[in-house]
Image (cartoon, rainbow, N blue to C red; front, side):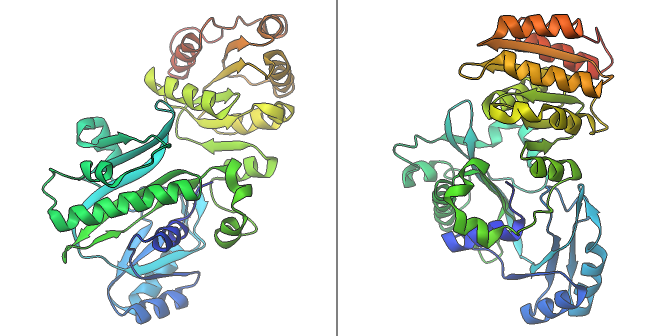
Length: 386
């Protein structure tokens, strides 16, 4: 579950990471009042669960309270990254001397937390990572010992930040790690973590994602931060929540259905590895196979989807039972796009036979083969079924 920027900043501030002064408003008049109270040049930031808001026009600035009202009026009610802007964060504009990047996230490869730090933060961190991956320092953390001060400091030394800034960034990393563990987050990211002209380190943005499976252990946190009705995300993501499905809309063309969050993430990584772009995260394991028809409809209702990979791997979960659910969904919805299967584990012989008999399709021997075929089909290349 993604928190909005102001919700994430609330957690960061409570944990001890400095954030700018600000207020969340829902009307232009409230934005004007907030700017007057702050008494300085302000930034107005659309509160939607999406990154790169600046490039999308979701951030404005105002030097006077009346200008803040106009900027808020332009943002409120607009749509940004598939979400309606119903709230705006009005906060003091920072005197930025340098932008840094810091995050703590789940690392499937290392099977534990991963801390990232880069002395060049800002909107283009993804492009920088692709262009110059060595510029981002990485540190895997053993959860039995946690993140130590010496380990955190090793990420920031030797970069010319200066002793005062190094100490503040080290403290911020340690605090972000404690917050990550305390709220059982999947991601705690600050981009940018800025150094001001006065040499102070401040979290200018926040991106925090909570583990949906852990929310029941944090009822007070959820009550404080999450509205009774969650209108965040895209239309398809909202539909997924209403159905009780873990669905996340992405910007690619290869649809994905897999069982288990880990296998689903692995499938997404494989799509990217073979040159494609995944269109969604949708975990359909456990009893979710009983919702195979609405799950498949979610994937198909994304107009970008041009192929679909179904990847099942069962131990306790039976692949034949999950496959039966997906086949029934395919027979009901009759999608016209090519579908590629990879099925392994408990019940695989029956599952593979069902796919052959009911769809006339041959499942692939490996996940990689199925993903490669789906990527090629989405690009208009190669065979269109398998």
